[in-house]
Length: 332
Image (cartoon, rainbow, N blue to C red; front, side):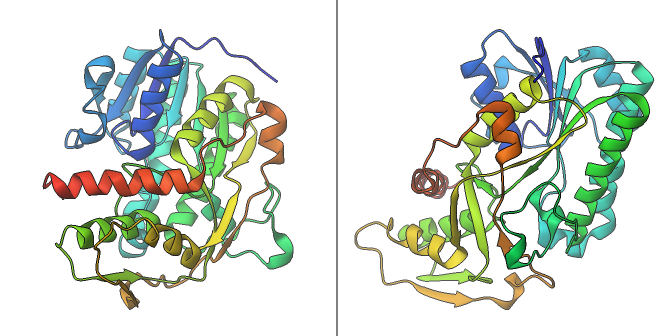
């Protein structure tokens, strides 16, 4: 077990779902840490509106090495949380080259910037459980040694990001630590992700803005859910307690089908809401689906003693309340 002395962090993708929650967590639980965030020039700042004056933002782009070099030299971070990515699986089928370029070349640019600048931070590389692809029932729970069988361009890009990060550790000694995070949700989760998409539709139905029909894809997929606020706490432990060069599965402990998740959500509908029909939308069916994701997180648990603390029902309720507010004030 290692213990780093972190005073300054750089979060790529700070304006996104996980990045904004990570910044909030550090500000709340680790005061005194200087937080810097990498954002694109056009990135919306809604997710960090409440903390924007407490962090330092830098314009840059993963696809532009010079901008990353400038930011890294200016910040000189003790730790980098590399969360920026094209992270939506269906979009990766429509824009595979952009997905691979952003996630693989973009990560390589970040690591190259550190190499050129001769900086030595701990670098958390956020890979994904999608790298494992479609596993067989006798392969669950999924360990870090499970073969990688990516089933989408997004998953391919995350394999590339994962492996190039390992290469830079082996070749140049850059202190990368890779996480393969399983499904994580919560308030501010993008509407394109399954439980958030269902919650947004329910909020619209309650507000009378949508017919009482929830459109769904494959409801038989099995997922293990984790709250994003537990996730970012795990990421902080990762850079503080885990040795560079390693890879760790991180995930929740509540496993269910997408159908069971939807049933939980529908029990939270407000009184007076019309009877809701659930209807399969073929456009939401992936060309190649990953239907069984149950993690073994023993390796990470032994290093950190991390355990999820927030029940998934609370996560789901908080996400629904977030969308209720967004709908009520006309933000979506």
